[in-house]
Image 1 (tube, one colour):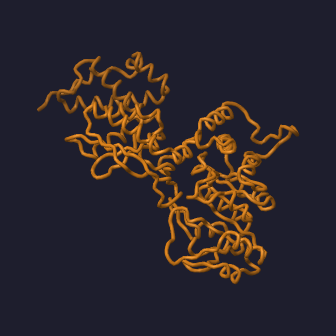
Image 2 (cartoon, rainbow, N blue to C red; image 1 turned 180 degrees about the vertical axis):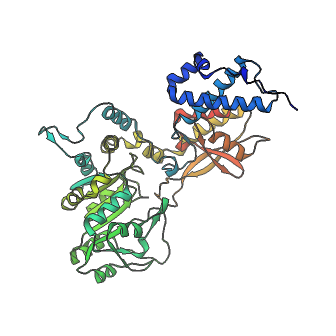
Image 3 (cartoon, rainbow, N blue to C red; image 1 turned 60 degrees about the vertical axis):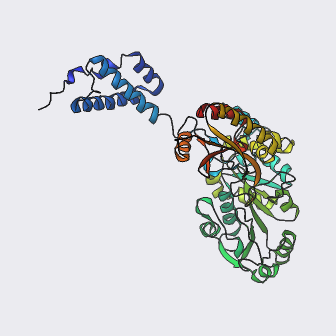
Length: 456
């Protein structure tokens, strides 16, 4: 029979709470959480004593240290929150799994300024009376897009839902069969249409839809013609799709508004890979919707812009309250729009800067990083590769880049990728040909040293 464990070596919880390190835990995490962690630690130490072996404490001091260490570990794990910053070394710029668009410094500064005190979120400063939050960012959006009016909701799926519910509930919406898309997370246009109360009326075929398909299908029950940009796929080969001006003309002819879901929200001149918002409105589209956190480079938001009569109907719809955004989103969006309007976005908005980044600048950073890692004992090679815009934008478009391939004898690519992912901050990389590769297009210049330290 084994020796009977001596539980007398375990100090009381009250005694352990007098230790300076434990008092520091209480200040950091609160007395209640710390007390619970200490009790769990004491249970663990009692189990260790029961099992015996070299790890069992042999004195009150050793037992107190063990309980303190266990409580510290539990609190550090459970009380830090699950949402943490990561370094994106994948080369996917608008990475949906990694929070999409990083915010510009100006957006962060305006967000903090608005968040740290009170604001005029729903207060009209000119009249000294209650105002509406739906007017914020509207002027900047109309300047950026050429629309008569605009309103902001919490994402583009919400914008689509509000548009359909507010303009077509109980009536028909005409849409090409080739535009019944599904985007990430299982968002399907037919499902959203059903939830909005609108009735889907498919026209044309999967690969070919003509203007006449819309005009023949239009009738007294038709409320809207909806065009959906195929943002995350391409249809090639024997295809046909009406031009926007032709579709707008058809809508006018049958007395039906034309709306377009643009998805990404391109406000930049010269980006041919995504249709510009302004071009759709100039073509006569009555209403567009798009995202704020894709290639626009702002916070998560859905934006509706177009004719004032339609936007005002949506602004007054009961769903608007459920889909509205908070002051933080509006602050970050306004500051991001200002960067676009000032012509600075290519330098100051991270998404725009990453898209425009020349491959020569990436190669210079990649070679400097490779040299430092080689000196630290890693096998390193700089390779040609491609970055992606991501976020359902610019499908098939590959931006030329340089990849830093890292390996070491005795360490598999999976193991290295796991170590980088488990670090603080986590570094998210790719594995190509059984090597971990880092694409610095999506790594902020100030984060290069963090990667070196993680690998060193």
